[in-house]
Image (tube, rainbow, N blue to C red; front, top):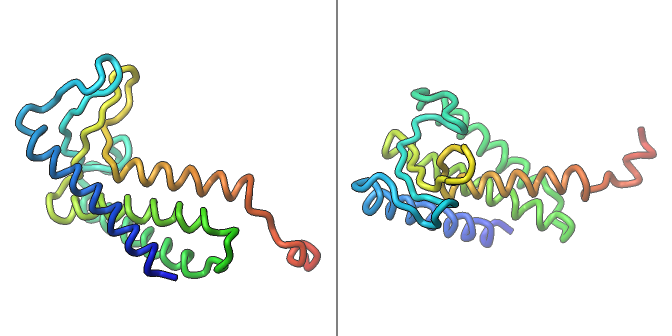
Length: 159
């Protein structure tokens, strides 16, 4: 039950780290380049905070918070029913886990997170592949929890 999600997480983390390595090697020296004119730039940023720069400079707090979130995520992953209905919940949790670990690796080994995607048409923080994993995973989880997963009828009657 854990092998496929573990391999998937390792692959996703590898993709994230590979893109960050490419940004470090190719983008850091030039700072920024246009990928799609008027839409998307690649801009190297050393992010020392979390979303929108919150907790900037609080590296150890961020690492502790990430570790706690990761442990909680793994705990609930293990508690999920082993049924097909929860397949997408498990997939979303793997995305969030991979994104969290990808950014945690940066904080541990570099002291900052490498961000490089920048939208040109809207004011939005620069982000990376791990951030995409986290946002997509959380969005899927929220959607499933709010609109798809139903409480079993037996539990409703017991209350």
